[in-house]
Amino acid sequence: MGSRIVDLRMKEVINIRDGSRLGFINDVEIDVECGRVVAVIVPGRCRFFFFSTGEDYVIPWHAIKKIGEDIILVDFECKGNPRPRRERRGWF
Image (spheres, rainbow, N blue to C red):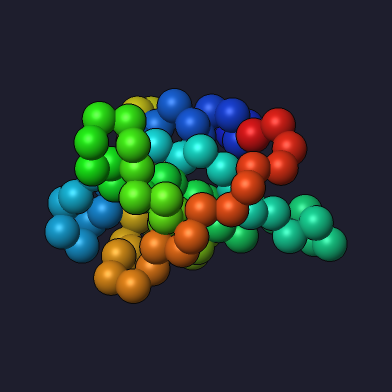
């Protein structure tokens, strides 16, 4: 049984390397040629309330270890991985 991409947004992403809470998924990258999700995107850490650093964590699909009812466990090296936030295109 599959899941919908919209359902992923409701789950918190936890990094099993250090137990840190990365946040919630706000976008996905899809390989349109084969129809697969290749990465999930989590906004960078917030510094002041709702203002983020302007960088996103791009977590490759293979780094996702478990998708549970409420959380997603990933094995992800955070150092040097944030990338500048791009302009949102689309509905998600």
